[in-house]
Amino acid sequence: MKIFLIGFMGSGKTTLGRKLAARMNCEFIDLDHKLEQQVELSIAEYFSFFGEDAFRKLESEVLKKTIYPDDVIVSTGGGLPCYFDNIDWMKANGKVVYIKLAPKILADRLESGKEERPLLQDKHDDDLVAFIEQRLAEREAFYSQATIIADGLSLTAEKLEQILEVKAT
Image (cartoon, rainbow, N blue to C red; front, side):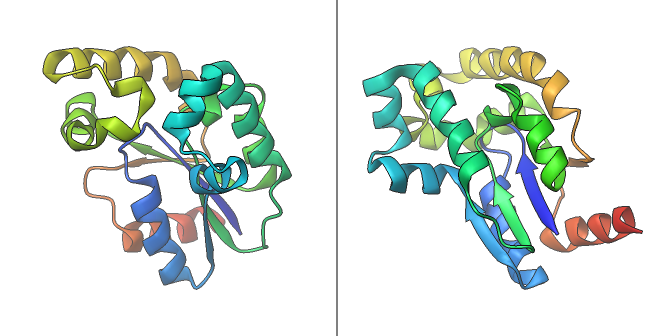
């Protein structure tokens, strides 16, 4: 089974994805990492040099041109489902899980790692929460199309595996 994890940056897609892949004995792919390897730049550097539009096009290409094994957990970038036909492509090619978290929780998680996240670099405290609220409002229409919507607050790999097993039957 191919499982695509979506959600806002800081929602735990990569951390949870690695743990879930280990539990389910399948491969894990971090699309952000794959993209960085391909262009030999960090996402922040790519954003800086080429801008968000170029990044979104490349991100979509990486999603669609990657060869996935039959059983894989894929962590996606936070904005990936919201551009082009990416959400439809993921749904046509596997199960999509939206890891949903409240803006304040996301802000708390993201506060310390903002340098690596181009869209957050100049945001602090209430401005960061407001930015996340605005972006989530824009993205919710895409995120909510997921096969499964999971509350990320207490989500573990074990709980997600159980949810996936229930959905498979």
